[in-house]
Length: 170
Image (cartoon, rainbow, N blue to C red; front, side, top):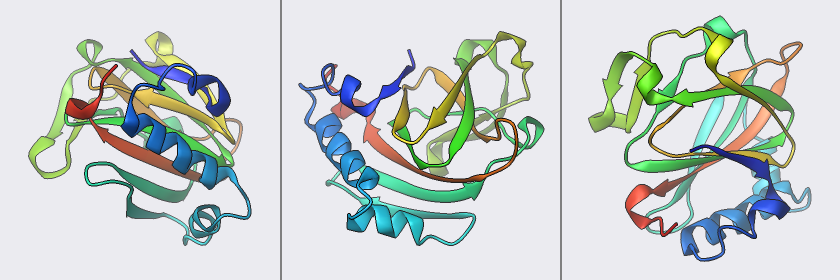
């Protein structure tokens, strides 16, 4: 059940979850060009990820990378955390599909809460283009592939908030 949208719209639907509200406050700061969060994300070196603790059980992965061809990306899912991915600047093409449609390639649940899936035809996936302020929420049954270029490769600044699935009150 992936959820895709822009920040002002989604706030209406997740008000009863303190962890989501905390994440959305963080996202607002990430989009504010005068904030320390925005400046910190834009100061990251290329191909970098920094983990930032937001609460005792939620954290953000602030990222800077260059988008790439689809064949250089992979589908992944998580069991312990919900991913809320938001582009701070740049853009990236994302795909998502239900995990039941994929075959397991690598199980890193214990080490990283990460499952990687074998390559899959993009004929049967949902595709979205995320631009500044757009985000996607992925639950455990949502396999997702990010980091793809749209028309050409570009720098993408993104942050991913991880919320424990057991803390979600949807």
